[in-house]
Image (cartoon, rainbow, N blue to C red):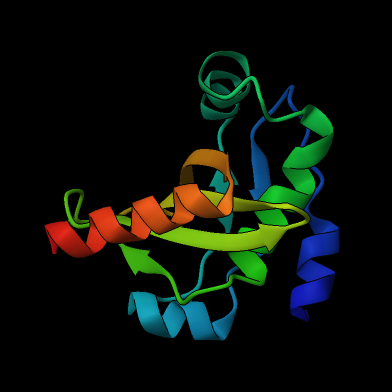
Length: 134
């Protein structure tokens, strides 16, 4: 599948666990990992949508996730604190989307831990913080 086809295939259903397309070869090389599906658990999705980020409309989830995971603006960035977590940053309209992905080798899926929508200033702060901690 092409990146565009993977983005189009992202169709989030808030009532169940969602299995998304596998990551692109380029991202897997950066992660140093074998390919496996991406999972967005119903519980994580509910926490993200209902508690932490009410600013993200349900209609925005497909694009925000798809762009960050399959057409990122940067190569995946390793989280300096949590060793199995990687930041995927994509540009979706006037916002950036950041997906925090758990790439634990022992799991059968890559798991989405968090999704956030950020303006350019927020991305600059995030990147500065990551550089400072590495």
